[in-house]
Image 1 (cartoon, rainbow, N blue to C red):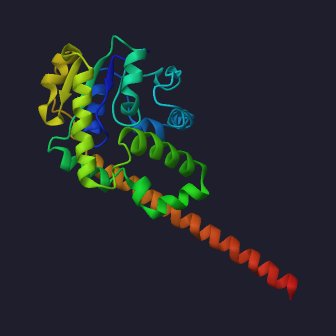
Image 2: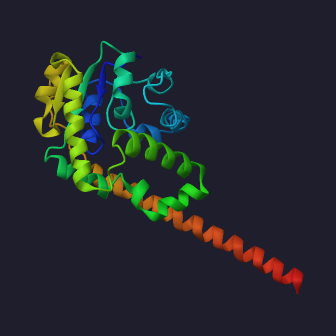
Image 3: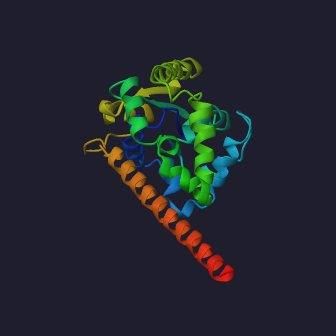
Length: 246
């Protein structure tokens, strides 16, 4: 498939609800959950890690991950929105913004998806599991390093980056091809932009913060299990050494 809509908005700007809305409108949509939760997308994390370790603007075979999609929102797609637009010049661009502004976006991000950087249990998974190593490397380089310029540790700089990025997108995309959108705007602006009828149902309002926190809790449980197994292995080796030397 060819991408018809490219989401440039950062994660934690209502992208999960927008993801659901676009699927409801008949545009199969890509989102970070398609990378880490969709078992049919085996190999996608490896692809995005390759992108993260390639120079910005590098040409990629985007069809490897977007073949079954006509829209994308959220990370990691938003990190390469310019490259995706160059590869799909007829696509429109959707810039999602947090309904309560840059400061609320920052707080939400630190509280959820920044866990790859500020939750020590994830570091254990990075050391001990292939998934942790790949996801941590991809996130650190592509999302937090390249797109967010390595400023998430400083609230003021991160808020400034959010605002500057918003203006960068506005300046780079012709007005007729760009929709600046908040999920509180509802179906109207999005459907008019896409030229489709509005569904006779409320706009999706997914509790993605709780969903992300559940994923984080599962990761923490996994880290403790890995620690337990590691400790058991060390004790077993020490026991064998004690028996052998004794």
